[in-house]
Image 1 (cartoon, rainbow, N blue to C red):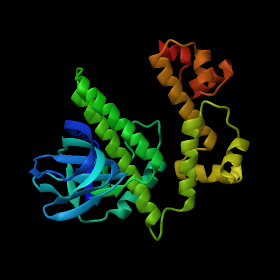
Image 2 (cartoon, rainbow, N blue to C red):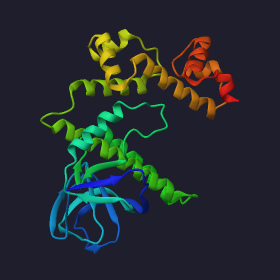
Image 3 (tube, rainbow, N blue to C red):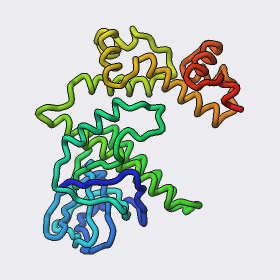
Image 4 (cartoon, one colour):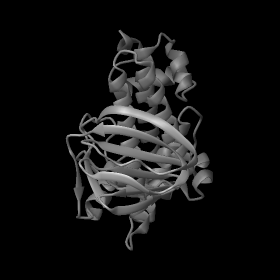
Length: 295
């Protein structure tokens, strides 16, 4: 079963937590008026929803629906995270929407990162039971939900909003991973060059603080730089250098707005060691030098 969700709307979390059953246990029977999300840390859970049986294992993302009877049908040991929440635009859908999802990925890659416009609609999709085999992503999701749990039980001001934002982050990441899985399983997936461009984008966003040359990129991706640059520009509308500069200037704007660091220090932190070149580059992309942008 597939769900359709409007990610422009933040869910409202009511309850969040973690349990670890070291003795064999069977889920209690209940019927709620809200969604319940489980993310399995270890073990096995045997659960049914309106008589349909599911077996959950490590790394499973699983969504229980409101107004349906949930209960266990076999005892087992397990540990898992849970989130009870409501969402005003989350529904089941029988249509696969595969073409729509692939188009969304392509349009997102082609979008202008500096534009105020959202490149695509905020509708995304995920599966009722989805195993997250990406270990780094799974650890990231565990970290995110632990952060939400900690804040929830501290009960500082706006704690439910904070926790809801953490769930929102989890849903976005799971929708992305689900789309990546769908694309990889297609008979006619996105051309390989799209994956290469996405990897270059990831590389730039992770390494923009460092000196980055065409030789570095050639060595990293084991392809001719001119070929990579042409492919990158065809898909995104920017040369690799132009995109790198955009990311650096965006990060610099954030640092100028949120810190009292010197302009030369900010330039160094975003990968531009020469302060004079950094000022010229900043003015080229923003329209004013960094000293005036801060004012």
